[in-house]
Image (cartoon, rainbow, N blue to C red; front, side, top):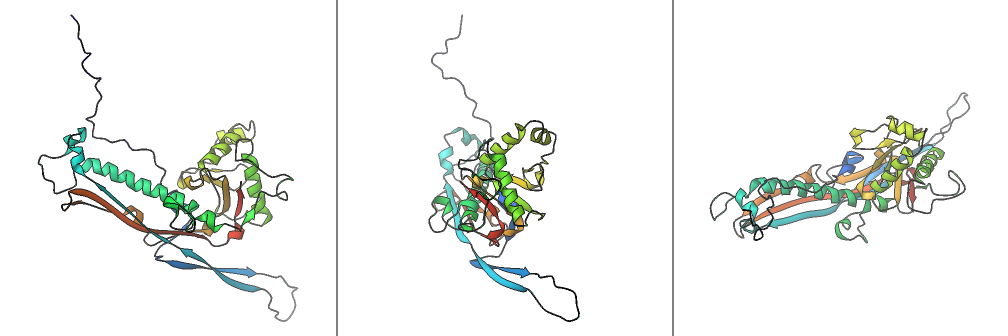
Length: 322
């Protein structure tokens, strides 16, 4: 005697309440640079540059030097996200077991499932904002990158180009960052900052994409007895406070990967206090409304927020753009 199961399909467990959500990289940039709140349109970033001249000590007073004021405009874009779901679509699926009895709804059902969905929606909004903070272009951007200018646009036509023959050596980098040239990338950025007297700043940071960061880690680990040992023994100084990152061995320059520079073949290094993100409310992106609408029997979600970026002193940022 044996079982004949040819008429049955293989069982697949579908009764677990937990929904698995994809891995999301959150809005890291809000924790790395300066954030200005209360910006509803355009706000000027005042700047002052002082020139100092030493003079021979003697009786008398001879004023020399100046304080030059200037401004750069930070303009935020207005964005919102509206979503809706029909709970009845779930009634004949396995999630129907999570919905309370009764044909009529007066609340968000199933609440546990929607909480998982909403948590992921919030994370996805934050991730898209993180990308736009770098790649946004209010003039020619597309999709989620069309509402405000990001840091790449703010740096357009300015900054310290570290990929010149006068910096580091007589050649330049011509291909996307790999394990073979990632260390030269860092040497070039650090040299460019050093030649402009910017390496003594305590808040210097190098922003790279996760792809470039992986190439740099490979270069350091494969570096053998010098860099390889240094990073493997903790010399790379991982810093969980900035959510990943290492200090490039032998320098004070911290390297942090950000999703907004993935696939861009661009890296930027400078003071974090020089990079500004403008918002209306500091918690706007994490505040949203969810309700069950009796008029069309759907669960609805909405959130509204403003974001903009600006760099106060672009000429104090070193970059390589391939």
